[in-house]
Amino acid sequence: MHVGWSQLVGLDLASSVQSGQLQSLDWHPTIADNQVSTAIYGRSMSQSEETFYDDMASSYHLIFDDWDKAIERQRAVLVPLMAAPDVLGTILDCACGIGTQALGLALAGYDVEGTDISNTEVERAVREAALRNLDVKFRVDDMRLLSTCKEQHYGTVVAFDNAIPHLDSDEEVAKALAAMLRSLRARGKVFVSLRDYGTLLTQRPTVLSPSLFIDNGLRRIVHQVWDWQDARRYTVHLYITRQTNSLGWQSNHFVGRYRAITPDEVATLAARVGFNDVQVLSPTVTGYYQPIVTATAP
Ligand SMILES: C[S@@+](CC[C@H](N)C(=O)[O-])C[C@H]1O[C@@H](n2cnc3c(N)ncnc32)[C@H](O)[C@@H]1O
Image 1 (cartoon, rainbow, N blue to C red):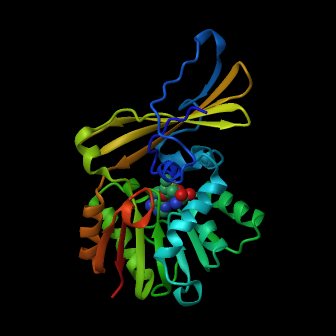
Image 2: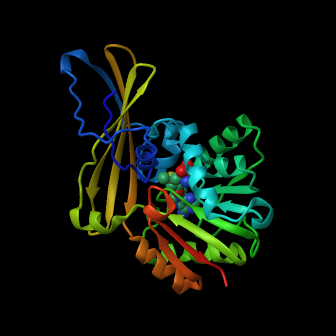
Image 3: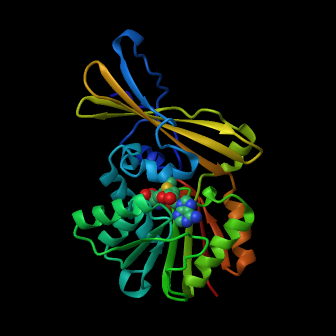
């Protein structure tokens, strides 16, 4: 099987490579035009930067090689970073999406609450938890406010898979970190993972290499195009293209917006809002595919 790989929206493909489930190869699609019938669903439908994750909720798992395996892989990396379930207290996943981390942590025996700004993703997370007989309380909340979350309550707050760069300024990131700090009990820990934007801010890539997955003999290609708006902000065009039979293809197009911020900059803001012991953990230390900023509440 030929497989190409790129880091997606902060998505779990690098860990797939690390775990040996994908091989990182130079891969270029070689599909003759006359063999392809393609349906493109793009911005003419509901897709917009404002509804990126609402639009993606039913397709989000398709950016992973195998979503259930991704849940397991991420759980195996995250659990060693955390205290045992009986001493940790409740974990708040404040950018839970469809539950990639929240479900895995619940499967590992943790008491987990999940919040996200996307109502459609939260609805899917609720369904995914029910399918797995997991008692995770999912609800809609904005990580800049966490107004549905108790203060000084959680043992750990997590925001994984590049959620923080959806915030549009340093002030918004600081506001989110301050809300996380408020919700943590004394000496509780925050863990935030994000893309390592350091070199990307210099290179300003406009397209990332595609990833190829095979589902029951049918190909699935995931790739991104980035349109830079200024020195930090870019619009991402995410395409999920699936072979429907030997001749047919269907492509879905999702549009989102990011503001690049480096892990060190997030760490500086964490210290500024009052966290102690702020550290940036590299992927070589944690085994996670992105750097993780961690810090402790006083
Ligand atoms: C790349 S997704 C990761 C989702 C989840 N961690 C997972 O892996 O399944 C980023 C998430 O951040 C959420 N998000 C963006 N801005 C947010 C905000 N202000 N408050 C809460 N969630 C937000 C999005 O809705 C999306 O679910």
